[in-house]
Image (cartoon, rainbow, N blue to C red; front, side, top):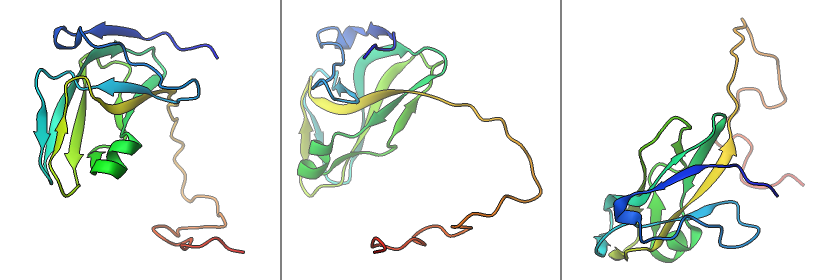
Length: 153
């Protein structure tokens, strides 16, 4: 599979970290690391903005989605508040990760720890077509639980 060329800048506080990489050949996202100088305690209920140490320049027509790591979520209750966070193609600042602790114990973010994953994906822009009424569908206006909790057999 060929990759999308993305310019990446290592920032001074993240210069010692490796570039984001895919953990396995089948991984959809690259790991983002905590570019911090010292351990960071995240108490239950707390949230912190954690730097990744990189800035990127995505090609037009792409976005990067910053997503939680499932292991941190299930084992420690560490989530991303705005998941997925969107990095637009025209943003040139540092990629930051908003970590939140919904667990019962304080969690320590260590320097260089893999704290999130980032997926680069194509973006479609819409061309709105105003209409007086939408076409009918089998679902109609049903939402928020209208399809039930169990598969229909």
